[in-house]
Image (spheres, rainbow, N blue to C red):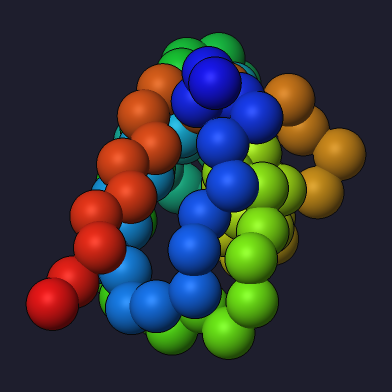
Length: 91
């Protein structure tokens, strides 16, 4: 069984997610009149860690997608690259 079709058992878990996404960066303290001209395209990285309790069996990809949507809710419509998804059962 590969990690893409792995079923996650109910229980408590820690997770760590890293995603990358395109962004228009505007340097801090840029006066409003110059913000558009000062901005440039870049790639940003977002790291999020947390804990949750899982009540029922679920596929690893489904769980990952739910957590990524939660982490990236403000990025609707943008392409998000999942760099890392670590899931660790807690005792």
